[in-house]
Image (cartoon, rainbow, N blue to C red; front, side, top):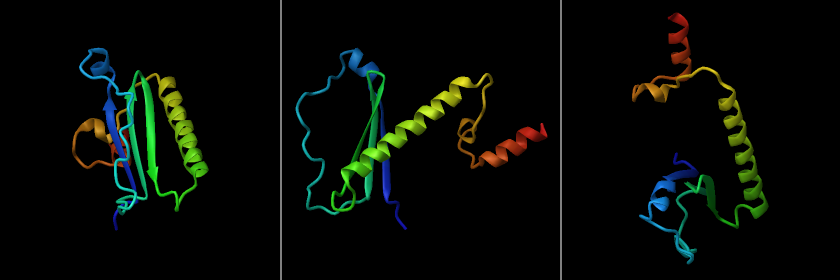
Length: 118
């Protein structure tokens, strides 16, 4: 079964913008795909950071979702991200996650068990 949601983080563009290597156009890029084409995903979420601000855009079928639903989804996403940031800012010690240890397939539970055995 294929995923219904695509999330593409395009990265942080601050350095490129500040160095003059690139600039944002004031012109509309237009539609990224034809309105008649079949969507690969039910929700296509794209994010990037410019001037220190995370921007998310969501492409969706207006026959399937209401705009108010997408606004509520993004508002909740923002709320959850702020909770994560607040949690991380309160930490006094570094906590490792499996992704910090390389490409080995280690679950968070495995990692916690490993550290508890040390």
